[in-house]
Each structure stands twice: as structure tokens, then as C-alpha cells.
Image (cartoon, rainbow, N blue to C red; front, side, top):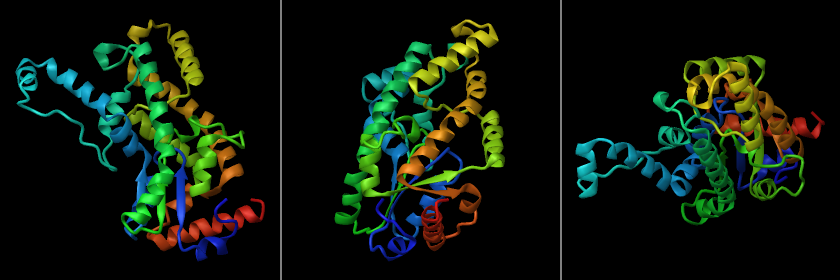
Length: 289
């Protein structure tokens, strides 16, 4: 680990963090607080959507536009430009591209097409994580930022093997930043599930886990794949996704980093608070917690 003790962390002239955990537990909130104090904020999801899947997202939007005759004529003559408008705060175009499997009439994708997009997302996320070191260097050499926060995707734990001490993504990341798990308690998990029920969002699944979820849902619901309500499948699988990710997050933190409870994250109001939360987490790890 880059920082073995809270003193190492507080005294470090270059502080570097990699925040991970379920979406909705505060990764981007803490990143914004740090960005406001002149930390470089590296968003993995933004990098995925711009550097690695930008062309695929643009092509999806153009296909939709080509279905409208007036827009199709303008696209063929370069009369309009159709492109995603991605930002740290708005990744809706990336989510739309990932999509959900099920009935095309309800916005779903054929399962084979969905699985192909999942595979592309996996490759893109691995590549975006591998870029972390380059952005650490770029932040310092180009922009003069000594401090750096990597705001990972919620699916970070799905693209690594937490039990492999030589996992290439984790070894590379831990050499450049301190991994910090933002851990949700039971009430946080309930809140995430309730929020997801209201507005199901596309997510990334490990291939074997996705196949099992899809097979079980089709069996339980007694439906053909093309009759599946995409949102119903997403809701059905989300609690299982959380349950499956928790031990993976825990294993990453145990071997590679530290833990901050989501309840503590909610108390952070500025960069100093974040620094102290990390210091306390290092002290807790030192005590064997």
C-alpha cells in the first residue's frame, strides 16, 4: 500500500485515492469535494464513455436518427451532427448504449446483442483502469495537481480477481493509488434497491453471473427472451448483484486497501474531512479492523 499509516497519509506531499463501491454510496460526492480543493478527478465511467466506447455510442445515436427520414437526409449530407454529450455528472448516453435485455418494443436488446455490449464494456473498463497511472502522471506534469482521486465504476470489482495477489488491474492500481471501499450498511442497501426499483439503470454483470440471472429469470417468469420486460429483469437481478459484489469489494479492501462506511461519507463536507476519513480508515486497518 502507498500509505501504511495515517501519518504516512497525512504527511504525503502527493495523495492518491481510488474510490470503489456500489454506485450511489458517495464515490462521486467525495471526488467532487476533492476536485474543489485542486485534486485531479479521474472518472473511469467518463473515460469509458469517451475514449473507449464513444464511437459505439455515437453509432447507436446515428442509427436512431436514421430511422427519422428528415434526420436521415441531413445526416447523409452532414447537415447535422449527432453525438453523445457525456460529462462526469451525466453519463446517460453510456447507460443507454449498455441497455437492458428483453422485448425490443419496450426498449430491450436481444440477449446476444446485450452480451456483446457487456463484453465490450468489460474491455473498455479494464483499459480505463489501466489508464489510471498515465493520468496520475498527466495530472502532475500537465496541470500541476499533486493530488489525485480515481472515481471508479460500480462494476470495478467485476473486472478483477480480488483473491489473486497478482491480478494485473489491482496491482497496477495499488501501485499508484490507495483503494478505498465505500461500504454500505443494510439500510444503505435498502435505499439503493428502492431507488433502483423506481428507475432501473443498465449495469455491467460478469458473464457467468449474467447468464445465471437470465436463465433463472426466464425460468421463474415462464417467458421467452423476446417477451421479457427489460426493467423487470433489471429489478429482479439488482439485489443479487449487490449481494454478489459485497464479498468481492471486501476482498479487495482486505488485500489492497481500506474501508470507509457510507454513513461516514455522508458527513464529509470538504477535502479536509475526506483526508481525515482516510486517516481513520488506515488507523482501523492498523488495528486489524
